[in-house]
Image 1 (cartoon, rainbow, N blue to C red):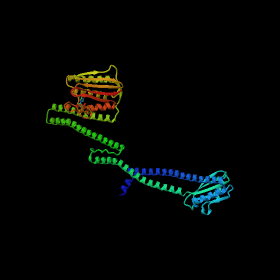
Image 2 (image 1 turned 30 degrees about the vertical axis):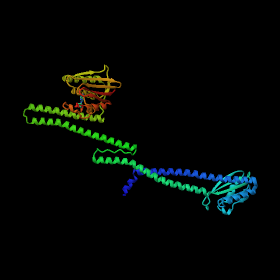
Image 3 (image 1 turned 135 degrees about the vertical axis):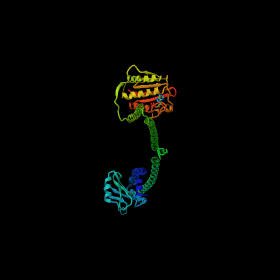
Image 4 (image 1 turned 90 degrees about the vertical axis):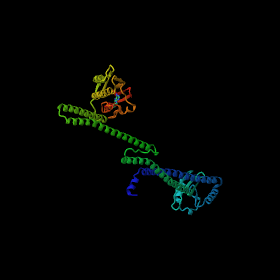
Amino acid sequence: MSSKKKNNFFRTFAFRLTLWYAVLFILSLIIIFFISYKILTNDLVHVVDRELLATTDKINRGLHQEGVDQAEVDIREGIEEEGKNRVFYRMLTANLNVVVTSDPLKWPCLNFPILSQWAAMSAGNHFNYHTLSPKDRPYKIRILSRSIDDGRYIVQIGKTMKDEEELAGIYRQVFLGAVFVLLLCGIALSWAEAQRAMKGVKRITSTAQTIGQDGIGHRVELGQEGEEIEDLAGTFNHMLDRIEKLMVGLKEVTNNIAHDLRTPLTRIRGLAEGTLGRKDIEHYQESIGTIVEECDRLAQMINTMLEIAEADAGLKKPEQSSMDLVILARQGYEIFLPVAQDKGISLEFKAPPHPVVVKANASRLQRVMANLLDNAIKFTETKGKVVFEIEKYQDEAVILVKDNGIGIAFKDQTRIFEKFYRVESSRATPGHGLGLSFVKSMVLSMGGSIAVESLPAQGSTFTVRIPL
Ligand code: ADP
């Protein structure tokens, strides 16, 4: 493995997770071990203490019932029974004269002056325990000094804690063995779990790399690595869907722009070419007039596109003022009335008797209404009817433009607000497909909304809502 790969391995999430898991695991096991080991050793000492106390009880009883000679016999028997090296006995009078004792030569580790000090401490119906850790013996010695027979005698019993320490040693070994096995299992499990989670992340990375080389058509396969990874993959796919949709839209818009620019340009070029061969000045003037008109239309189209882009990006905040929507709408109605009459369409205006005051940019609002009225008249046959209505509904001003014209198929109803989108059947009518996207952008920039309800051959209703 190269050193770079090694470094990468130590920086992987899986490695770090496993390391953390192992460290936490070891720390918690060390804590558990110390607590349980302490409890165990304390318990073992208590058992020894109880045993020592019971033995002194027995000696005390013997002393009471059968005198000091019998107590001496009991002690000697005890020494024989337990083994001279395992149990140490000493009985002293209250003024520390030794009555009976184990062979001191067999217990060189015991410091007899200190033993006498402990004996003195226990005089007068007291008792005390001490633990010795002698250098020349492998095990500790627990010593009880107790005053018996109403303080007349003191008995000292020492016991090596061989069995107890051996038991604690076994516990230590078993625990450490179990820790080792558990640690290995823990590391293996956490490594496997980290790998499983990382599998999803790796899949996303590899999909992103494939997209970089192959195009946006690829998606991350959803797996079973857990909710977070599935969410990440789902969000990533969703983002790709959006980008793909935007790219398709962008392509369509670019195509439409190219198409919409090419048509007037071709017309201008054809006109100029046809005029070049002519000699009469009137023809030149007429052609140049038409070319100027075409150029104006092109410039207007480009300006509208720029305005939409500006409004969508929220770059330029237009001047806003409070105005009566009813007055503004009535002006629009008056402008479009002759257009409607020319086409033999009845245009009706309805508005509440009181003012409907909105805070907006007057020019934008006028153009919104103009575009809707223009469309309604454009897509309604002669003898048709268009109703232009202003309403106030709670905290909204509502602009309704209703017609009984050609209507819009359901599948086109969301698309008509896209730039350059024109329904197939209305391609023969003049227009660039920018009107409604301009309306939508302006309405959204005012914090409002626009909706359409339409049935083919029955008519359409456009509803604009603007917050008051
Ligand atoms: P344009 O009117 O310049 O074509 P618009 O963006 O204003 O562009 O409208 C987009 C398309 O929506 C129109 O081409 C037409 O097909 C459809 N449309 C808009 N308004 C109406 C309407 N009132 N009735 C029927 N179709 C409509």
